[in-house]
Length: 83
Image: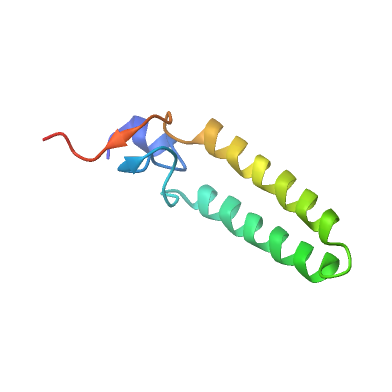
């Protein structure tokens, strides 16, 4: 792993577009916080306030994607190893 790769918290997926599992502890902390916020929202808002939970989940997901965008490899379509 070179120095540039170590700066990334989220590597690019091998196939498709997006990011894979974190490679740094900071990425794991962000992913854990995301899961905890979703679980807390589900426990507090479901089933009575379904629309509010959907809005909560959307906001938390947008924040996760923003962190991945800022701290992950540049996203682009990938089709596996070329060599």
